[in-house]
Image 1: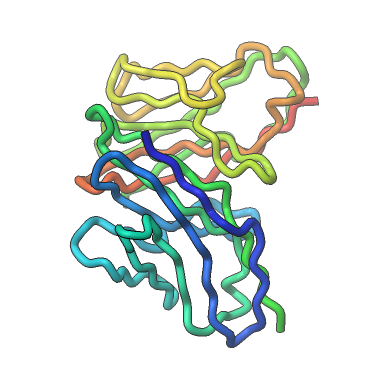
Image 2: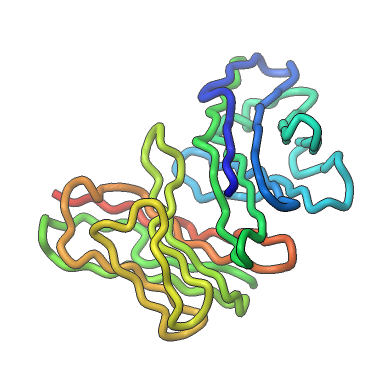
Length: 115
Length: 112
């Protein structure tokens, strides 16, 4: 069985300051992990994915995430927030449980960026 | 261009009037899925399909039906819509070794 917990429902930062969105997961197998972003009234866009090639994953728009197996975490970071980063962010885990590929979504973290 | 398409994008209907939301992907993916998104609840899986003629319930299947007669299409059917099915619906397909999901643009459904 797999699960995802996004530890914060809302994160508020000032423009130009660092962003940290936290995600913890559980998985019985070697998981694939993803972060998706959803801007207001838009669909979901893939930010980055972890696929066991490297623990530090770089995504689009300056975002990064680090896979820490010992902490079962996959936190999303960005050194300097921009106003355009204001959106909903979803952490997703997907493993091959029983040969299937059923992904599990976190409940989302709303990132608010103040000028 | 690799994509997942959904139609309609917006729909307002009345209680009890059957409707279908279409979903199509052009990436030859075997796995497809429907989600609904509601404020504070994130995305919840309604149904998924591992391949043609193979469908299974997700977390919130009540009030929905699906079919998978062809690999590329995975329509969502509401036989008798109710107001609690007012939501934003996303179709997705999964492909590649690392199970990346590709999402459609979403369908905003309002049931009066």
